[in-house]
Image 1 (cartoon, helix red, strand yellow):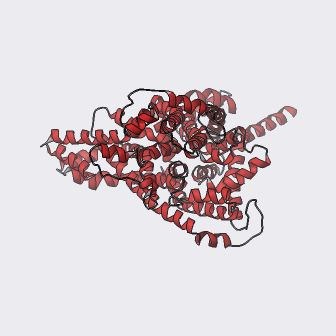
Image 2: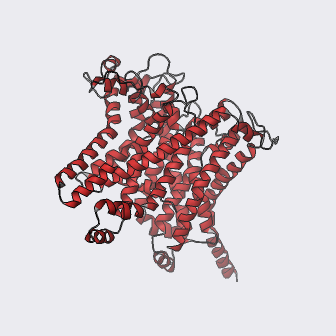
Image 3: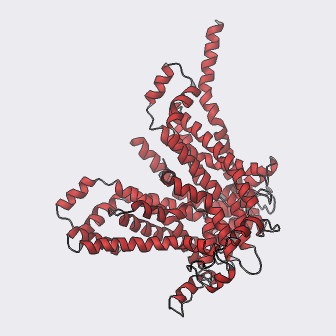
Amino acid sequence: MSVAAETVILRRSGSGVNLARFAVYALLIVAAAVFLAPLVSMVFTSLKSMDEIRAGNLLSPPGAVTLEAWATAWNSACISVSCAGLKGYFLNSIRMVVPAVLLSVGLGALNGYVLTKWRFRGDNLLFGAMMFGCFIPFQIVLIPMAFTLGKIGLAGTTAGLVLVHVVYGVCFTTLFFRNFYVAVPDELVKAARMDGAGFWQIFTRVLLPISWPIIVVSVIWQFTGIWNDFLFGASFAGGESQPITVALNNLVNTSTGVKLYNVDMAAAMITAAPTILIYLFLGRFFLRGLMAGAVKG
Amino acid sequence: MAATERMAGKRRLANALPLFVLSPSLLMVTIGVYGFMLFSVILSFTGSKMFPRFVFTGFDQYERLFSNPRWGVAVQNIFIFGGLYIVLATILGLGLAILIDQRIRAEGAFRTIFLYPMALSFIVTGVIWQWLLNPGLGLERLVQGWGWESFSFKWLVDPQMAIYTVVIAGVWQVAGFVMALFLAGLRGINTEILSAARMDGAPTHKIYTRIIIPALRPVFLTAFVVEAHLAIKSYDLVVALTKGGPGFATELPSTFMYTTTFTRNEMGLGAASATVMLMTLAAIIIPYLYSELRHERRG
């Protein structure tokens, strides 16, 4: 990092300005290349045949582009005992992520509303207690959760996974909405109350219409977190309800015989596609969620 | 009479409504976070194997845990992995943030490139790096092709070095996020102080070491907490990249807990390891949450 500091010295002292600018860009471009290389290699590898992979290297572009590895990953790759590819697991993940996101974001919005506009004794303590739930190592809840899901008949089901993701997602969505609504002036709520608006009317007419930025942030945060989850999926899902991350890991790590790197890479890209697309199109909101999740209180 | 009673009843209902709305979440957090935490801690004092059995054995499981060689490796690894992960991600993130803060062109493109790994699942990251670092066709072949014929890179299958591949993949994933944290911090520094220092003729490296870096202290703290939290919780990355191997060379507390509980059916021991993880994380998170919330109340 001394290099970075030095470039600034050069720039500010007036001499060698161009050299300093050049160094800044050179460092950035090298860093960007290093960060992009894994993605480039993944794309290239997924488009090659195994013969071509053995003949080339990580970054050699595919000579004869083939989508065979993608088709195999989607339709016919072997995952544990069945050889039907990732497509069923992709649907499992969608069936899990949609209700889990809707429920956790909806509850988070209501919680945030109550905790800021209908304050009561001890509400801050309650909020603090909820916050801690965001940061526990989930290993501490795995055993009792497994038993509870078994007791209520949700072991190995998508509904069980949805429940788990709502329980541990609601802490974060509450945090997001609370911190957003805290900045909404109480006068707005008071004025609406004067006009005779009740609890629900204030929420739907006054707060919800201005909430779309935090709704987008929460939905992206929850979607990314739940889609990318592995621990809960591996612990609580049965073979029929396994999410795609668990299937990807099984596909890559349990295969015997020759390792099909092109199929591995295509499968990894299929798994990553939804969250990467969201990141590319809604990156601003993705970042805002990350920052809000990091800067607690 | 009846009308006023109805009004009073309505008001009581209106007062209860907010708490009623909050109650499902409260129930979930009370049971799912605190109740389950307690359950696991209690289990750690029992001799439970495959199923919970409430035969209390005192601190036996903790004694077994700390004399278990696999747990010893896991603890050693979390210090190597966590330490390097935190230090390298912080240095890299700060460096990238300072570079990006130099009023460069295409800032948005650079930021997008550095941050995209954060959108990936740790499983995807593990799979990618397993390919990149595989001895034979991976990095080794690439560098040999560039002319360094004797280049050898077999960390992934070397018990001594495998943990460092987890560090590499982990830092690659998180560095962009740390960069974003520092960039927000850099952009938040009062520019008047900076120009005043410049007017006084302070050289730029002094401005960095005396003003900018000290002003970023809260960001360092946030970055540390986020990184430590991710490091202690990280499970998926190791599973996908090394499966905890070769042997159990890349065992972490999180993988130890999982295999001990669910593969080896040593539930009491698994619960003890989870309790140790919880205590460690709580020691980092609680003071941080406390200071953040207190700060907010003051402000």
